Length: 216
Image 1: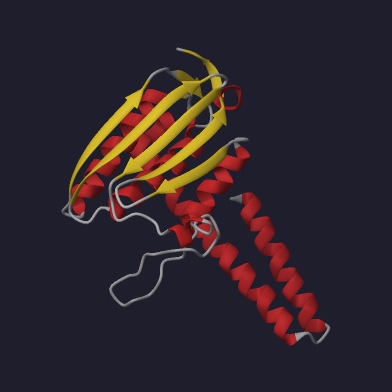
Image 2 (image 1 turned 60 degrees about the vertical axis):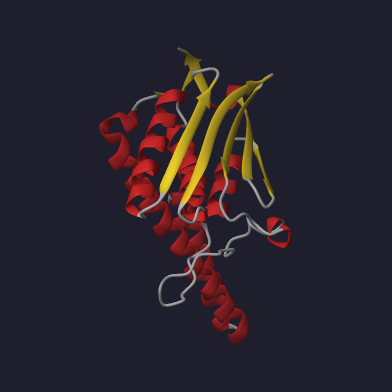
């Protein structure tokens, strides 16, 4: 969040410089970018606050992957109930270890899982798996919701992309998946998505040594 604040300040300073030089259109564009980055920070703060409420004081210590998976399942089961949806959660983990990157992993897992809940209209299934593949940790989140159009798949990780609108027709900020992509990149991983008329699957591959602190 400090890094985001630094970028916001740089954007605002660029706005001031362009304005002083008389570049009105360009300065307003720079100001708009700075404001959007500030919104990203506020969303990041909300994500952190939500995660802290879930995990409590233990958020300051290492977690094992199975604990993270438990929190994600429990939190999103309650979220589904809040939305009046009947969703079956299937979780699977074939190896376990401690990680110091629990906040980042919780944030990206919770974002993908909450999106899956929202994609299901009334009833459905969400499957979350953590598996070992050679030297990598592979995380998949799959749902049988409404899916993502092939035209949109190429842009879903771009800031501003969204299919969510409130009751007044106002679009969401559209930073959730771009934030996930940024977190995955910081963990030296990759993320892909596949979607058809039956399932949508997000697949994250992270080098295990990047996030592992010790065997359990």
